[in-house]
Length: 330
Image 1 (cartoon, helix red, strand yellow):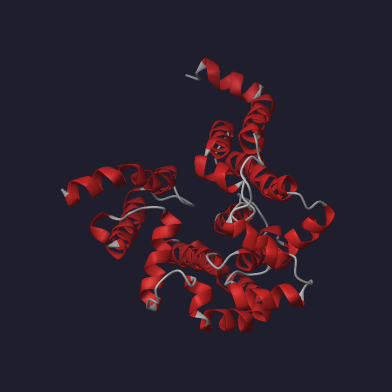
Image 2 (tube, rainbow, N blue to C red):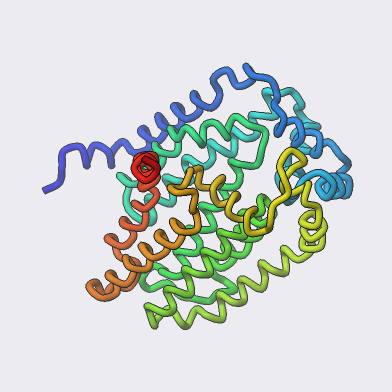
């Protein structure tokens, strides 16, 4: 039996989405320039004010390890506007764009109820609000990443009856462009590309009908590599400088230590026992076990709702992390 509120949500979904957008905008715009530009923002602005494009690239080699896309965008934005408020407003725009995108993806993969909940979660996310008020690339990164994940999922699970001619397929081109853009936005985009490839490989292992997508997928990844290849020599020069990677205020560490530290920062967690690699393995085993159970018990044409919801529930474990840390360190 359909709940009374269900029809109400469907009839007024656009009005509710507009309200969510207004709420998200209020949190991101309220007293946007109250605090002055801080160190990371100042360095970002300084790098973006070099000559386009070679001056910015040379500055990134000497003083940073980031790709250039955001700095190129900020360079022209700064020339047009320039004040602290307007510099931060660029991040607000990218942050606000993520809210209707969450709704769009949620509606196409699930329904309007899920889409509205996803948009509301994005609008009220404290972390997303904070980065939306910062002159950094941290709002354009999830925006492009969400598109990349959607295109990857849709590539592996096309709608019924869809004709697959990959050179004419908008999902194929979406994968190529979004993957390239995410790599040019932040170096952690490489982890998204690797994860997407692992997902496709897993789908091909578990579902025979997806194996016909092997060559179109390989072609898309070769195109991504071709688009990213001009930046590879620059990245190599950046990585040769330990100071650019770690910063002069941090001690020199091994590459493995750098990777584990990066994983801690990306997840925002103080892993129990100080062993992030152990919990990485546990999460991986959890995802594999969920997918294995899904294959054994549910013969579906794509990832089942149970499998999808279970995988989506994994990040909720982060809320239990402080309790686990207390129990293990007691």
